[in-house]
Image (cartoon, rainbow, N blue to C red; front, side, top):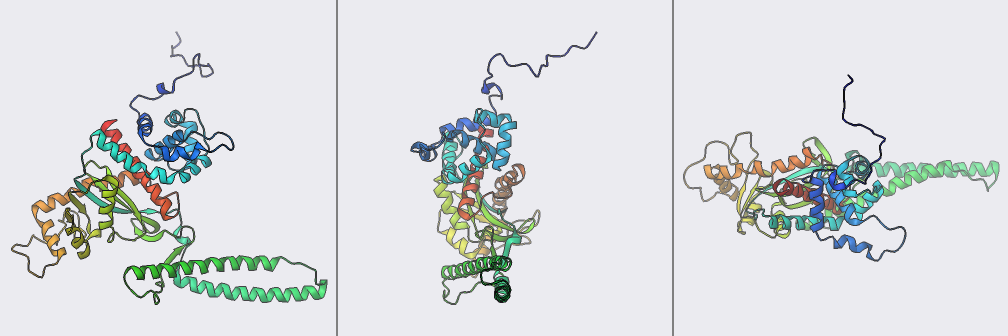
Length: 432
């Protein structure tokens, strides 16, 4: 007797149209994202289309918002990859409800509404509070380098620009002389109305490169003057360091040292509470975290509406000036004074010193003593379980290691979207 199987007829049409709500389990992330987006204020996005009457009707902005946000939740950031998922992936198809926008539409939507999407961060945090997330108390702070959408090989130092500028200037002079000689020879042989394009094209290429290098030098010189003004040094005599870098693909990115060596990158900042919700986020061009402590405290208050009671940070944020500034707040800081080896306490190496601190002790010395105590070390140890997993979840689990957009303003918008979707995932796991 032949084996009996369950019916399998790929060519058979469905008698009734299927319901999209039956394609996924009710507790699927796609439905959670859809329901959450429905509760957000999207007026900043939808208002753009209210008075637009030209061309074909656009795709619904709520649909595109849900598709984009879900894509960032599941680690699908590229507009081309999202378009492919809209054809192949059930959750994307459910959210799009049969629509199939192409990658250019998705990319343009993200760029057009980046500021509005950035505003979702505060809205989602507020929703977390309404759902029952604890108020901000203890917060851990960390920074990480995320690659820019630019290669470090497209960067040039200020010194190299001068050398290349002189080289190109000499080449342009030689080409002009060759062009004049060639023109004179052609005029003598063929007449004054003959036209030759070979040398002018070569000349134009070099002139174009020379123009770009001149603009890059001016940008570095302006940056040096801005830095001098910020530190109170004379602006007139400020000159760029010979090794100061300018990237021709994304001039606002910087060469930074990351886990994989020196890369063209931005420095992203996150402040995370004990539920691993991001309560403050920002992007900076600074190559280290030293100047980010006080700005991030301000950002936490602005984005979450609350000042933390305790703040934990690694040695990258430690300086006498930072400790003096945070002492003027109501925050109880636990900031490592030195890089630690595995198992070490975050204060000075060796056993905890006894007795009163000398009168000459600096603020850094006092913080070191605080972290060397059993209670201080226990509080600081919580940092690794609060903020470091969040960086890992974003970079490793979701695979966000490089920005798709260029320029500090657009990068800030994209980072805000990444942090927003991290919080959405946390809410889904807590309350979904």
